[in-house]
Image 1 (tube, rainbow, N blue to C red):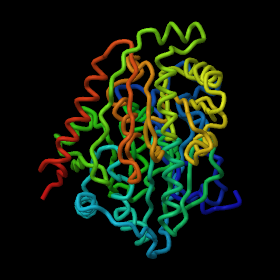
Image 2 (image 1 turned 45 degrees about the horizontal axis):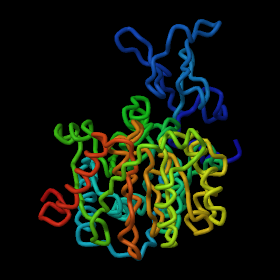
Image 3 (image 1 turned 180 degrees about the horizontal axis):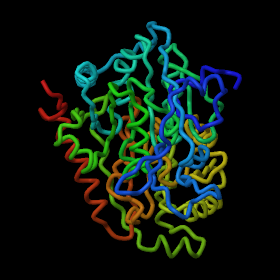
Length: 440
């Protein structure tokens, strides 16, 4: 191990630390028992009896990607150490009055050791609202982790934090560069399994997103990564019943912001019925009416983001679209795309005019001036939260706070209706005294 600084605040398997450090590290039971069943201490998954080694020990398959945790060997943790104190916030921007209210409330909650839920509409400027909280911790030598379930969101956050803070920022995901110790960690929620009683502040962005939502192991890991006296901040534009229950139970202090930073309303989707979409795609054709919609949009020269519910359909559509619009630069991304990050950047910089995507880009990414079409919006993949997030890609920028947003469907679903109802409700709150709900 060349850089011994990487050991602090992390959870290690036996034999993965140098001997001299392992002897002084805290040994932690690798399992715990509940109702006479054995569970993994790292991820809380059940250690099934079928996962038994010749020695008789059991091991956890759920988190084996991080190395094999087995019942006859302890885990090791090395206590975190302080970072150099400083004044690290470079950001010179100005928060709106309502953003400032939320920012101040977060600082108050931190001082009172209260966990917070920030429920703010897409484009409200959630990232900027947490800057003061991050600075409060890192300026005094503390450790902050900003986690998200989505790699694309993490990459975007890393760029912004590296620009707006002068201290080192480390990005952690499955394909990232080697870990280095830094006052600010940006990580996918899976990476939290590598830490133990480490962070003074944990912020989880897009807390309602897959795979974090409803995932007991990831939620367990997020709690275990915190110091015992630490605070967490959860960020969402689409709250869940589980989160609201935690608010009701006083486990979270809810802060609400119902207006975008530029003061303009959320874009309300327009429904377009197109019954023959699936039939045409199966015949390797695009309906004439849809081709016409795209052609009209392209005259505006604004970038166009087209969402599909299924990887195969989206990929097929993107290839078809190139034959209909041969002069257009057309890209496609999904969770399986090897060059996804490069393609997204090309779209952001205007090198690609039309980008076809799965729900991988439904949240956490900003494309200035973009229009959005959701194809087969009636598909079961598009639940209300997903549709609200997708709708939130439109009208985010100050240079174009409006835009075209179409839900192209083969029959209106409850999810479609619910998404529109929620968007209209947030717009109503955004222009009433319910705009910002911050406890006095």
